[in-house]
Length: 298
Image 1: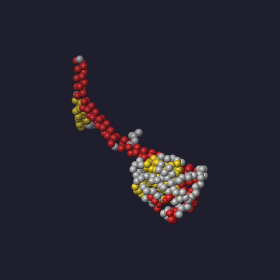
Image 2: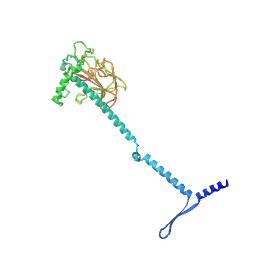
Image 3: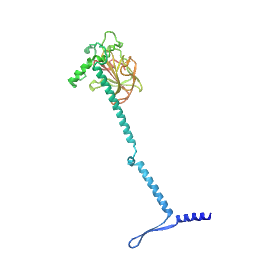
Image 4: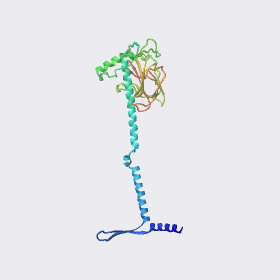
């Protein structure tokens, strides 16, 4: 016990013994400065210096951009940018697939590979029964495009062999004689402006509101486009087509037969050309855009 106590006292004594650190001139041996130190003071100084260095390095890594140079580190801004790029790439891929599907379907129709039955095209007295459609500027397109439009409008494939009553009086072909079921109830935020390229109306309604088919028909197109989001187009009797754009969800597929009032989609805010949840609704007759307000009370 006495030997152990002596060793402990000897160790403490060596730790607290004072030493003098003298700095001399190498040539004249003149004393420049001196310091009284102990081993304990040296340990305390080195420990404090080490802790201070660790604190400074840690603070620099946390609060400065130096951390971005560390291998494997990914900042929040980079993650947001990667997510945004991934979403844009996914949107472009879906748009590309939708365009490819549309072109393939169009090619099948043009080549006559889709079995169809010819439907008589009615003659409409535009001057007496309908609003004159002099707002469509056909001079802004080439002659080849005009010829293509004429061929496509007269192509019997677009009739899809429909024989639908549309709740009309027999023998009448004027669209105003048809009964159009309101696709949705709401207020109109943007009017029919064909001069500005707005060939329909925008209807604002509550979120998750169901969109219904305006008449009996067959789904001609049900897919995604980058500009108008989820779009569904329905071919009706007598070359009438209705379009429903910016939907959140599509409930019908290409080729599905629908009745007037059937739920076909859910109102949404998809696509680039939208600023809020709404339905962009269009009606086309013989290749001419009609103002839906002339036929439906919203």
